[in-house]
Amino acid sequence: MSRITLLFVFSISLIYLSPIDAAAKVLGYWTFDDQKKLGQDLSHFRNDGELKAGAWTRQGKVGGALNLTGGGDQAPHYFEVPHDNSLNVKDQVTLMCWISFSGPAEEQSLIYKNGPFILEGDKKDRTFWSSYGLVKWRDRCACGTFGFDANTEGGRSAVLPGDPLIPEPNDWHHVAAVADGTEIKIYRDGKERAKGAQRGPFRNSEQSLTIGYDHRVPVERVGGARRHLRGTIDEVMVLDQALTPAQVQEAFNLGERGKSLTEMVEIFSVETEGKLATQWGAIKSTRQ
Image (cartoon, rainbow, N blue to C red; front, side, top):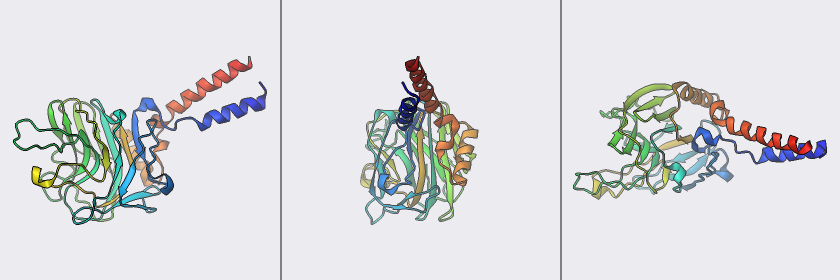
């Protein structure tokens, strides 16, 4: 095989490399940078989604973003990812995004894996709890602001109270929830702000993952409202592992510099390097 042919084969192999390490358990990474590829997931699993309502904006934290202002008298604005088994996690998960609020201070869902769960002992059919979700609680209440809500094998696992910050309108914040199997931590702008106990593995569901909204049952059945995001969301990531504090800090630092999370070496480089080594080894053996 000629050197030119070798280089051609090697170049073609680069084109088909997945940009994300499957072993790193990145289940979804939605950057919203390209309006023409708005629903594209950059993860190995290709969990592409669809903007159901809302608008794309160039004014994200890192490139483009989603502007979601629905709710109330308006139709809900949200991004939806169809169910895939890859989005069902075991006992660990990390949820991250950049968020800038613009609307009222009620509860708002940021990243929400919907689940049709019924609370035992409850007379009402409360089938709205998430499998796992990153949320904003009501401002100026005992709940705090940024928190986590999930249905686990031992019951509901929620970080209450959450981060006490009351966000100023249009300020950008990096928010992360990290569940490691026994404890859930809330990070804001790279620092730990709150934590709570995790009551076992997550209960899985076959419902969609929504960004900026949740598919809870009608208000009259549960005595509460669906949580619409009022603001702009960017750089959404879901991982099937608990990131370390240093990794969460790195994600925040990258966003502050306007950089993509693909620059997180521990998460994004291993699979690419492994495939390169395997394919280049095959090419060399062919030459011999």
